Amino acid sequence: MTHIINTALLGLIEQAGTAVATLVEGLERDELLRSRLTRVEVLRQLKTLADSVGQLEPAARSEMPELDWTGWDAMRPRFSGPAGQSLDEALWFACASLVPATLLWLRVYQQSQPTQFRMAP
Image 1 (tube, rainbow, N blue to C red):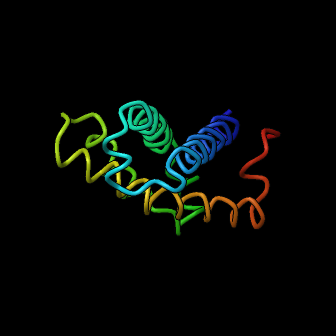
Image 2: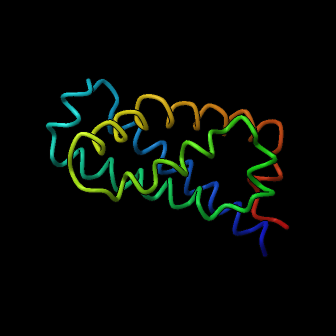
C-alpha cells in the first residue's frame, strides 16, 4: 500500500509542478507578484506540491537524493504564512528554482527508476 501512496504523491508533485511551470512561463518576478489570479493559483499549486512532499515516505525520498526535499520542507510553512516579503520570496524562489529542478530530476528518475512511478506494487 505504501508504494501506491508514494506513487500517487509523486504524481501529484509532478502535476502541481507542471501547473506552476505553465502558469509562470514568461513572467518576471514583479509580474507574478502583481497578478492576483495567477499568484493565487500558483500558491495553491505550490502548497499541493509541498504538502505532497511532506507526506512522501523517507525511503522514497532517499531513492531520489538529488531532489531538494529539505528545500520543499522549508517552503511548506512559508506558503501558509502571512502576505508580505517572506511569502513573496518563497513564492518566487519556488517558481524560479525549486519547481524547475524538481521537474528535471523527476524526469531523470522516471527514466532510471520507472517502478517508483508505476501504481503496480
